[in-house]
Amino acid sequence: MCGIAGHLHLNNPPSITELEMHSKCFESRGPDNYGAEIHGNLGLCHRRLSIIDLDDRSNQPMQKAGLTIVFNGEIYNFQQLKNELIELGIGFETASDTEVILSAYSYWGIDKTVEKLEGMFAFALFDVTRSKLFLVRDIYGQKPLYWYVNSEQLLFASDIRFISGQVSGLTIDDQSLEYYFQELAMPQPKTIWKQIQQIEPGYIYEVDTKNLTITKNNYHKIDFDYKKLDWNESLERVEVALERAIKKRMVADVPVSCFLSGGIDSGLIVSLLAKNSAEKVNTFSVGFKEDDFNELPFAKELAQKYDTNHLELVIEPNIADDIYSILSDLGEPFGDSSLIPSYLVTKEMSSYYKVSLSGDGGDELFGYPIYADFYQLESLFNSVPKHFRKLKINGSKLFSRLGLGDNLGRFEQFLNKQPNGDCLKRDMAFSSVEIDLLFNNRKSNYTRRYLDDCWNFSNASTISNQVIAGSLKTRLLNDYLTKVDRSSMMNSLEVRSPFLDKELSSLAFRIPNAIKFKNNQPKALLKELAAKYIDPNIHLRKKSGFGIPINHWLRKELKP
Image (cartoon, rainbow, N blue to C red):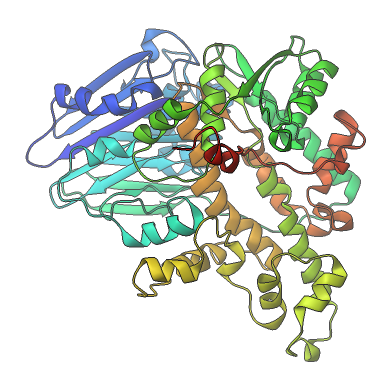
């Protein structure tokens, strides 16, 4: 994992000194090495966290055959691609995944190369001969890449502060602010600044370095084309794909650890890793003194079952200094309070490890409870004769009988009119009415339009699949992946997510929802595997998010 940045100026190219000075804002992303190069009007710089091929020859920017790259992330299938290229007669000077990207581009070009990559990444590749600069981001947006362009210059970076620290006249984006006040995150690709955006996940931005013309290409789309799978075949294929995803993410030249909560996702990762590993698994858990937020007993039980090298951290409310450090490093607003325990646990883990596996993505791919609720209602709706579907229905009575008392507004909308982006709303902070008051009743409804776009972006033909796809573009991208990246990179720790593996996620999209939500159970497949490897009664546990007792602390220990 690393931090990258670049500055292309048609009239006033940057200096090595300027690149180094402005990139200090993301030094924690790559404390092991710093490198920078100037190619005509383009300056590239890189801060490295050494994980694969610790040799200095793998430092960046890396050059090969008229190409230069700065790369942040990991390519999990790089050895497979390397072997394929060697058979084609291409030689290599390093053992790094970075060189594989350069060689792949030389042979296959940018489109085919990016389609072949499996991993989390953001990179900038400069083709000197063609005067082309390619800015590329992975399919789920696990790694950030900000950019800014005007008539004279282009800047890009892993950290928004590299750009905001050099560009004058930036203005707050009111639409981003409106979304933030409801969802506590930025609505990517927007940022808090009107003039700065993020490269979209699954996109290639091709920049003509002679005139700053930019062409965008979406190289990945979610496919919900169901396969004819039964329950047993689905279960077997998910288990095999998850095992492969975990194995890919264990490739490193430094020790690897695992986050371990009391939940299903991280527990499965640890269990399957222990099953297939000849060495002890390293695990790390975080907890609180407040019982409602503490999952340490469950985590410890699993750690003992698989005899892991287990460490625990109990978070106390004396964290004011840590909160200040977090806020000063974010660069733009982020309000999910679970960023705090994420920061604290990665801070502690980084004292022992450089890499950790996490369970992020399991809920989005295999089913939040809300997904199962939508599927249940969709199945009910589809069983109603078409000429009755347009009748107005009193949802409250129906939902209470079904045990679906929450989210009545969304469900009544489901039955009485066409569902839309409102189904993706979480209302984490202010309500729509309060937003209107905050913004002087201007009623821009940007959040609604943004969520509608996210609702419609995939080829999903069912409401429940639209919820799944839309959640990837909203809560996963804007909130959870942002939280994981920022908190871990502040502490120079790389976090890898097996559930976001390309093969596993593609399989998850193609499993029929009747199997995914068997007996109206969210995460039915993962629960079945968890019963096998973790605890036969794990389905009885109450789901607990990775939150902190912030309300309790603000009223007591952290009270001003």
